[in-house]
Image (tube, rainbow, N blue to C red; front, side, top):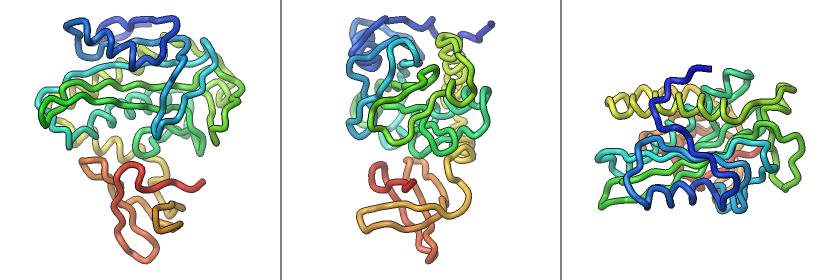
Length: 249
């Protein structure tokens, strides 16, 4: 299969603490190109958002990270980097099944089940992002999940097929390189619109929970800084940053 390869050949590490940690170590040793990536068969301490662990059976799933070095990107505009990763995952998995969406801010869902999780770690220089490492676990071929995660699913469970990990990685990196080039060319608004169009539960009223309790609302917008804008049944506009509101399933 041909790939565009506007990025370095991914680096394979059989086992690692986490691919984010391994990639950070590679970056610390010298010049590293944009979109350098590492992937592994097993992580001993795979991390997710909110301090959660990422469950992955050895050799069954895609565990990878890639790095970018944005030019003069203020930290307050970091959300565009998250959107690039989310859209690359969304586009790739949508080739294999319907029902893929992006659950704000950066999980990938199939129907009401989680197929991908991403942890992005940014290093700052002054007020700007100097380096951004995006680490993702994609459930590909795992058939049984034993952790207490509420709703995991793998692509193999959805389709009944087995998938080549390297092929999926190259597809994701192809897509990420296209979106990153769009970002560098000043087309962030196009990325933002594509992200919003792919958002989970974009239409209609759904249940949410914040510090004041449960409520029903519809998604009104997602602002440039990643702020989640909801309109409740009373017509009130509610604005949330990450971790300030939860979906209720």
